Image 1 (tube, rainbow, N blue to C red):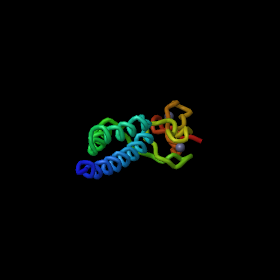
Image 2: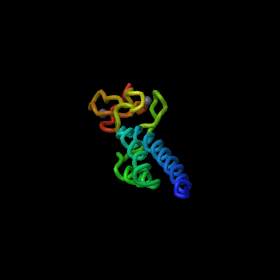
Image 3: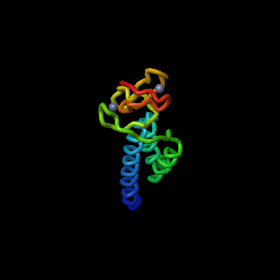
Image 4: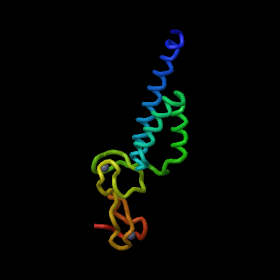
Length: 121
Ligand SMILES: [Zn+2]
Ligand SMILES: [Zn+2]
């Protein structure tokens, strides 16, 4: 009886921390195109099988492993994506255009190619 009552704060804490970590990691990983579902599942799974603080360790490991890069706003769906992607991970539309001269990729809103200096139409 006593031990059952003691477990409630643990379960509520595990659910809250697990779900909040999972939501945060899912959104960030999706912007970086980095297995969002797998990271979110690991958070919730460890919250229940290890302890309520395990998802925080997962977040720390994730922060260490995640693809680095500035987040930009997709011009099509207004969600965030990491700079080095050529296609938006949310809507799948291209967020880069090809330079007509050197054929390297540049941002959609850039007028001058950062690689060769060619001005695009
Ligand atoms: Zn988009
Ligand atoms: Zn160029």
